[in-house]
Image 1 (tube, rainbow, N blue to C red):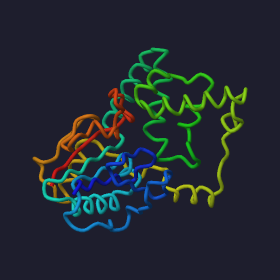
Image 2: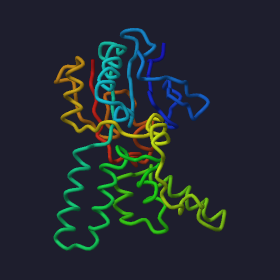
Image 3: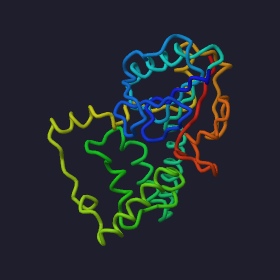
Image 4: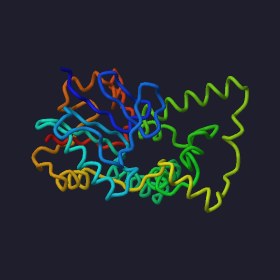
Length: 259
């Protein structure tokens, strides 16, 4: 029997060796699943559970309940792999840009503005894409080298698509230059229920603390790279990095816990 590998909240990043689930499937082979509810798998049934940039969309209490469910369904020796935006790295980069801008380094002003967006935009935005989308669709992306380094394949693919659409139409899409609109209270509430916003943030310390709190042993929790894993043949799945080793979301911290 092949191993049971579960990719939860997968979006469009999937692999056929895994069972792929999302709240609102974007790909026909992806099955619907609300991770806020108890996971529909028996105790000790999964060989590996993976979720990337999912946990931060849950409030801390719902997130802890979800991670506890992930542990419940793991077999002894099974691996839970979590990728989330790395609060530590964001803060360090923000402070670097802040100090450089304060010291009069002109190029650091845009770096500082971008890192402010990266730090708070997805927690506070009231419309799809927020300030991050406006930055990404600028005719000339400010601090583009930093954005590409921080956002990796995610930004590169988006910008390739956006530039191709602009070239095909012979003009920038009107929505890219539309002035920001202030949503009504009802519109904002509806948007926040859709799941795009971040409801919490984690670093290697707080994520390890959460894993210990739900029952994982401290010596079985480890920070990994995008291509390093206790999951067999991990790099071949290309879930955190492509075949060339380019990381999809370099702004992440990758942590694994073995039951």
